Amino acid sequence: MSTARTILLCSLAILATSDVGASALPPGSAIELENGFILSGSTGPLTTISAGARNTLATTTDGSLVMCGYMAWLNDLESLAAGPFTRFVAMNGFTGSIVGLRADGSVLRIHSSGQQEYPGPFVDVAIAPGRMAGITPSGDLVWMLGAPMAGAPTRGSFSQIDLGSSTVGVALATNGSLAAWGASLENEPAGTFVDISVGQTHAVALRSDGEAICWGDPADGKCEAPPGPFTAVSAGATFTIALRPDGSISQWGAISSAPPSGSFVAIDAGWGFAVALRADGTVAGWGRQAEGAHVAPGTPFVRCVSMDNNWFALRTDGSLEQFVVGPTAPFPAPSTPAMYQDLSSTPSVIAAIQANGSVATRGFGLFGEETPPDGAFRRLSGGLFHFAAIDDLGEITCWGLNAWGQCDSPRGPFLSVAAGDYHTVALRSNGSVAAWGDNFYGQCGVPAGSYVEVSAGIGHSVALQADGSLSAWGRNVEGQCSVSGGPYAHAYAIGHATIAVGADGSVTCFGSDTEYLCTFLQNLTWRFEPTFNLITPGPDCDADGTPDFAAIFDGATDSNGDGVPDACSSPFDLDGDGVVAAGDLAILLGAWGSAGAADFDGSGQVGAADLALLLGAWSV
Image (cartoon, helix red, strand yellow):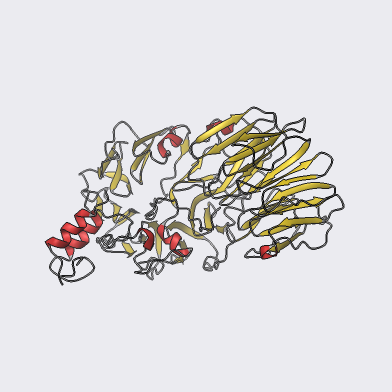
């Protein structure tokens, strides 16, 4: 497991139609793609919940899946159509595999490399890193993935199983006795029990008289159970929760916030957060990483953005909902009435246009992204380290990093704007397109034509003409600018890919498919909202899935304050993006003949020797 704070980055937001086929989600569901995604906004009540390390899973009344939290590894949802499922289980560990138990007893496992089917039948299933086990209707304990854990029983009749780490677990026998294994759990208590749950290094069991019995590692007070009676128990990584007969929740151990008040029917503890299900099918969540815990029916979403351990949804009625309870302050109080016009983000700052046109932000920015200018705006777009907003007169104001002139907006009027990594693209009212900022790949070299939509990616730009033809220019290493076909209804530049959508909702992708984005979208039919803004993920120097600023948030050392952890920082990485590449070369050339950070050889001025050193450390 990992304590790294999860950062979900919204690169493309889309709404599922009500007839998307086998993988249909409830109308109004929203999806975030590229570095992670969230499926949310169920229009029906939820029936089961499961909290993992970085995600929350739930099933609806029709046996379909609702997912919230970090899911970047999930590359294929097609097999989820073969339900209905009775429940899903989220691995309480960093890697995040999930398993679903179907009504017929078969099991589906989804993980970073794909998915596997296990015909079963099974009556219970549990997952841990590198291990998965199930209980058959006859009570046999079957290891479905990996070798049996050391000390696990080889014979017996069981009704329930739960796994913690890759070495600890507990099985509940049909006679109510416990079989536990692993260094911290091997001395299981005696008695008759009706429910079990395993954390990282401790376990809790519900005795038949309603008392919660905990054992294992006593650190953090997670084994100091109060008197019952209880009806359900669940063990997190450093805490334990229990449900009382009146529906209230008791909690002990280390967790960042208290449980919610009210009456609940089910509970589940994750890594540093917990979720609870109400009788009406809505969910409450609390704790440090309650990622997507507040999945609830309501007005459909039109946009989702996320940052830190919080994510936000802008609904069609203009309300802005914060779905995750974390240790940080809530979103700034909105103007009156509490309605918002637009919502966007950079990787570290969320911004929303309030009803009066002013911009409210939350988060921290390395270059002032969290400090918007005064004024009234109607459209907003977040890039990597800068924002762009349009006012009522069609004029654009940008703020944040301006190292490549991406904030030096020309005069309008403009109809829309899209902020890329280090450049900005905007559509004028006469159909022409203006682009400014980094032009290393020609992403600001707009071809002649009259356009109706624009979009900006990492190093390329896209524009759609009124007749549905598509233009793309800039970086084309992955083929993202080699567009063809049409006519199209909408087009988007996202990361190193271009996404073109036909009038019938079909999807054509050009460029990089490293995140399975194109494959995923091409298997489904979607209604794309043309007003959605696109952003790109922040630098991730060690490619571990957690952006550099998030790693620094969680304690990684950044002694020089360049936004890159010291563990993978290079003195030649002048722009702090984790690689030595074109951006660093541009900074060096801009400082030629003067002193500064690019004076690698200490000669007092930037020159040929420094250029040679930078080129010798070139990353891409």
